[in-house]
Image (cartoon, rainbow, N blue to C red; front, top):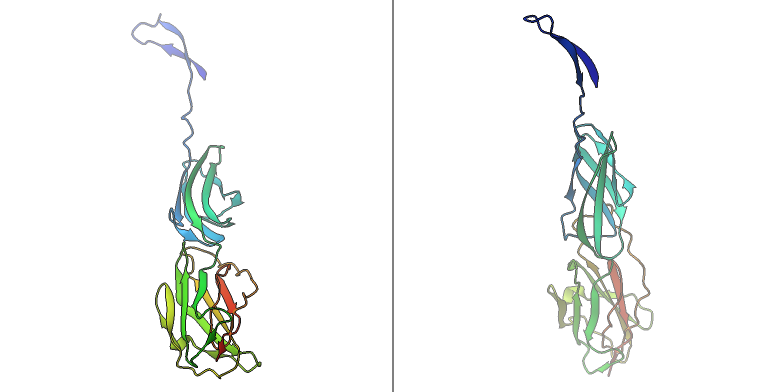
Length: 245
């Protein structure tokens, strides 16, 4: 605001004052965008969030779910922790004059391992063949299963070293089954242990350590089979012996 004197050269008698008020331009809100993870992506509990931010007055800070993000030019990044299920990622930017803007998206956090069960033979079931049929079933609602991670180890109740039978099985996206080529010993109990991992999340940094769950007993008196297990990224299921008779 200021006062200015004006003078008219054509008519010098016309003199006076003008009161001028200058109004500042309104401050523009920052522009902020989340690039990764994508909306509805399946992620782990530790998530690397990246995006871009800009402002005409300069960006003062960016936070993601309350975590202060690192800024590099117009890029920002922050690693946050999320609980399981559908969770919201919210990024907020503030400029040098205090104007703020936010953006958000929902992702699915997978903190559970695959559902895994040994369907055949039944636990503690006696079998009449030294090469029983084995059927393992599995699924994972959020991210699917990593079938290449499947291990199946059969161990004799007498403490002998275990033998892998994974190579005997035909593996699909939902299960593994076949008749064993490995010969079991008559009259002996066996324990079958199966492990399987979920597919790694599409966006996670770094992947969280798997939770540890005690194995579920599965015994075979040359017959085999485990129940559903509850796990995190990796899951182990064990069954009691199956007896060959």
